Length: 138
Image 1 (cartoon, rainbow, N blue to C red):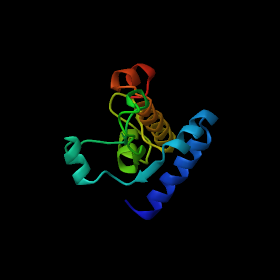
Image 2: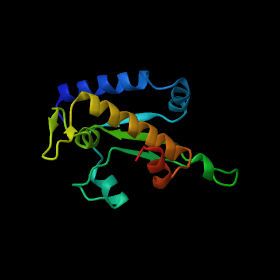
Image 3: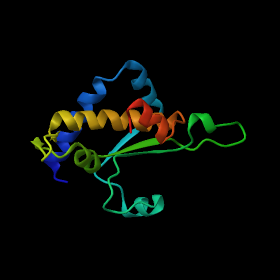
Image 4: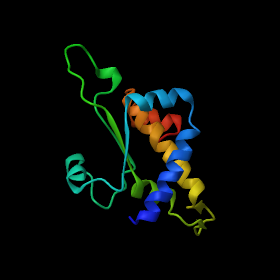
């Protein structure tokens, strides 16, 4: 990813974060968000994901619902992957596909950033993919 694209994405990221409710900001203070261009090959291999699959984000750690005094806490972190989010949104440029569905552009990238942040915070609280899908954050 080129420096200008990274800077553009990071500006959008900050814009999206500033629009999230205060409660989400308190959670982000507890669980750091780390921006990366893409997941490493090692991470994809560890997760059993093909290199051509999109990965927008990843929560690493122990969900709050699984913590106990007998199980030591693992450091929680949420990784967001710029390239996966941009690809999921349809790219930087707006367009319309053959069936008339709009894709791409900064507005869709912002929405994908928002969904990804809320999705990964949901994992921190113990929600699984089905729960997140029902909430509209899959």
